[in-house]
Structure formats: C-alpha cells, structure tokens
Image (cartoon, rainbow, N blue to C red):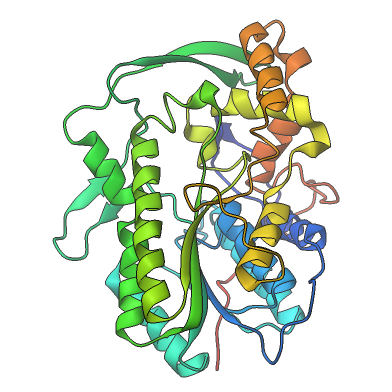
Length: 404
C-alpha cells in the first residue's frame, strides 16, 4: 500500500496532488451540512442520474439528492487513478467517500468513471437503469464543465475557450505568490476568433444534455413525470464581459434554449420538465480558471460573510423544487434561481464598491482572503479542519465497486 505524508504543491490555483483523508472529511462535512429531508421518500426512493458527480455543484447535487431527496441511482464523472508518483485526482477520492456515505445511508448508488460525452457511457448507464433500477429514471442532473468534447457522430474534437466576444477584455484578477501573499493584477484576454464561439457551445452548451435525454428516451427509460435540470451560472455585471457575455455565456444561452425545447418535449411525452438551475458563486476547480472570478468571489464573501450560501444548501433547495417538497419557482426565462442571495442590488453595489477600491495593498481588507485560500486548498483535500496532515495516508484508494 502506497502511504506517504502529503503536502500541498501547486502552480497558482492548480494543485499537483490531492489528499485522500482531506477529501473524505470534506465530503463528510458536506453531508452533515445538508439539511435533513422534508419527508422520507416512499419505497426505495426515486432513481436519479447525476452527470458530473465528483466535483463542485455536481458533487453537491449527488450528496443532497441522497440525503434530502432520498434518491438512489448513478453518478458519472471522469477522474484519474493514483499512480506510483502521483495521487489520484481529488474527485477520485471524493467519489470513494461519497460511495461510503451512500452505503452507510442504505442508498444504492453506482458511481461510474469515464467520458460522459461518449455514447458508450450512455449505453452503460442505460443498461444499469434497465437491469438494476427497474427500468425507469425519475431525475437527471447535468453538471459538466470540460475543456473539450468529442462529437460521437463525427469524431470531431471541440475545444472550449474562455474569451470575450467582440473585443479584448481587461479585468482585475487575484493571484497569490509562492508565500501566499495576495496580488491584484490587470489581465487582458483577447477576443474570440474564428469558430471559438461555436467550439465552446459544442462543448459547454446543451448538445450533450439533449443527447443524454434522447438516448434514455430511445430506450424507454424516462419515467412518467421525469424531471431534468442542467446547472448554470449568470453572475455579476463585474464579470459579465468574460463570462455571461463571452464564449461561456454563449454556451449557457444555448443550454437555456435547450432547456426550453426539452421542457416542451418532455411535457408532451412523459408529463415531465426540463429546467436550468442558476446557482450562486462558489469556489470550484472550474471557476478559479476564469479571469476575475477569484477576486469577485473573495470580495463577495467579504460582503456576505456566512450569508454566502454554500453549494450543498443550494442543491438541497433544488431537490426540494424538483421533487415537489417546495413550489417550483421560475424566473421569466423559465429558470430556477438559486443565486438570488448573490445578485440583490445592495449586495452587488457593495461588491462593486470594493472592486473599484481593490489593489494589492487594500485587497486583504476588502475580500475574505483566508476563506478563499482555504476554499481553494480544500478543493484538493488540504486545509480541511480535523485532518492530521503530518500523518502518512494511503493514496491508492480503489474506485468504488458496484455489485448487484
């Protein structure tokens, strides 16, 4: 068994190793933070599929679904196994911890590792639904953030980019030096060129979500009243040029258009629903790659403090609405809005004031940097309270087995 003491090694916000015990404790803490169910599900509980179940809001959707809605079913993610030189990815260890929690809670959860964009994975999931879960799927949560996608029909590899549309964008961003000291920098991102928008939409838009629905519907696996939600983000005017008005924003607009099309179709065929769920800001492995988001999120936490709603509580609220435990509350575009705590006028005005005042000299007074640094480290299992980081830890944790 490969055991060693792990210390964080990183390049910016990207860490080279992950801590198994820290990831396990983090998942346990999320489970504890999830509210208890409003009511216990009848029978074995509804069957759910979470695509993108190992990180960020997808992980929160999985845990909240198990605890709050009493679901059973399948989670799909794409993670790297441990090697002799490197630990597994953090999502690998979080998945192992999620499997342990599901088992202890008496929930039948199968966790698959592979390319969610592939038809082979869709076939594997469909077979499991048929053979293990009674041949009917009640819910599908779609939470995928990826740099590239291979189109199963053409074999074309599409690559997503983070670029503004129309012209270059200059924004402030937050970085930390090797000693952890913060620096506010101005960065410029060049505009989308060529087919950058189309490429990003092909990866991050609604095409794969719709393909999942097509695949499962084609096998007759959608239960009456089937509901599906794709997780999304709008964010602040401060980050709009690089996000909501940029290439990723074009993909999110496509995702929302897909939701409207799927909603009409599912309502007609199975009495079902399709929505996008707009979540609030959080520190995730995906969000830290977006220029300006780190600074914005740190400032937002500085304004809201504990009022910044964590993903696990947001996703508990989503499950309440999907299952009927709470009324379905949609905006004028047909989206569930879990970001209202973030986008009120007074909160955004306070963040904007701090944004204008933020410099390397002042940012520590304006943003909650200790919280932000800790959140980044916790993505990889470090800085999790209650974990002894001086102890040797086994890194060759196996992927959860699923037996009938």
